[in-house]
Length: 396
Image (cartoon, rainbow, N blue to C red; front, side):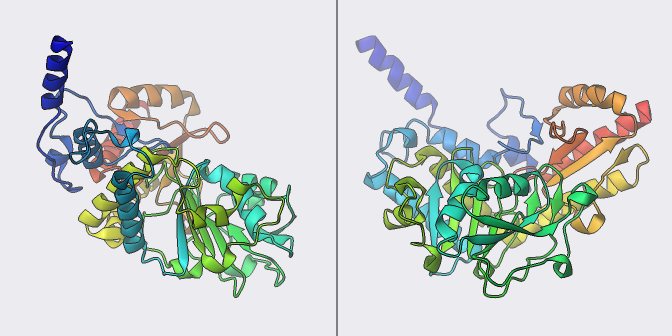
């Protein structure tokens, strides 16, 4: 027993390293502390990259969070340590997004896909009808789920263009008696993004912002409800953020299960049952990181530059092609195809060898896709562009 305690104390001492400054612009700070590791540029659509400073801080706090003697994953969700983590995370998120006081912030589970059901179960109410915009694979899934619970009317549809654009406001056929209007601001698979927020008058606007939340400032007051899976710009998979206007809570029918009622989670501070505590903690570190780099305005400038550089490189080439109409191109997900599809596997193999991973397009559309969420540094985009140009020289 004595030797075991000695080994444990030695291990504990080994983990006590100096904090790493959180600086998105410094590649040196990004890499410090990882001398024995090889970090790749991960272009996955999700789970996606997390900011390295966040991972480093989580590593430092893994065995002992701020003198508690526990990992956050070991804490009681009702203990004072985790309650302080949860409160700080919500406060930071409210500050980043300037969330009005009359909106509840819920930290839930089940991903955005569960919200495809929770939204109609909670918002259809006695009206029973809702408008949906069909602009890609994820909005189609939301529509299919909502049809299980009420009448869904398609108020905008771009499937005839193979989902290569977002509809303009004048194309929308909104119904004045709808309980809400649902849309997907960014279609992750097709790489299509709305360049505007739809005007819906007094009808609550619901948005699946899984791929866009925290990538730029938004006016939360224009929405009745926003939901987002965490595994893009927020944190690890397992956490879902819901931001809902208080007057939309409490409309669920009596048959709706307790755990699928927003009122349940709002009344219990997202702790009716055990929440995804470690994912919540990591999301809180991401919120602190965003604040440290200057907030969402600064993040938007970085994201705009990344997307502009990558699209410019694609458009300047005859070897690569992006199928999305320029006004609807996503900042976050950039699909592209090679002029010679038979080279796809070679491209992916050589890219991986160069430290550029997870570039294969979604199985439903093929080709390539580079997801360049918040945590992807500009250096990663530049490395991808350099590889693409070299690959074209050798195979084009």
